[in-house]
Length: 238
Image (cartoon, rainbow, N blue to C red; front, side, top):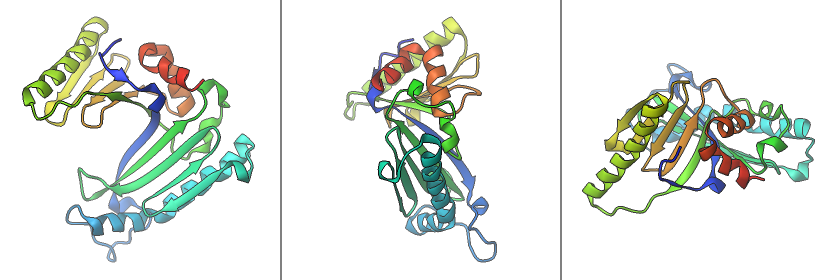
């Protein structure tokens, strides 16, 4: 499957995004906290405050599990926390978590977890994803897109071309295409429930496979089903 994109497999990562009501954050207390009326610094600070304990616990849990399950020593690991974020770095992976206000709904918080592998999936133990309380469900591959200045005709033509590629695939192999030209996004839903999305603003191709979660399983299954997209990613980790 070719989408006529200059993919950058060496910059690929895995991701999990989830939006949750602010009222569902563990630190939220009815009667003491009020929902934000809109986007802004105060709203972000509120979300950071309410989710701080959960975020810190997750970073600590991953750090501890990495020592136990991967047999790593303290000097091989690093962890850090900041307002609204944290990370754990190991020889096999880099993990980052961010918590902020959902840009689409100021009554919700957005959790963003990013997993960057430093070795190929075959070099990871089968229980690797047991390290993470929340596992990856999306493979993301950046692509290089030449800037299109302010020429809306050119931008529109490029978007049309990408949608055509997805529709060609759907016509041959089955599936349906959903497009959102205003936001530069197009998504192909395959007959087996896989989802291939293109975002021209962030210049990212993302791949989700129904029923397949976790860094190791997702990469291996993506390479099996979508070799043209995923095989260069695993090759870059060898």
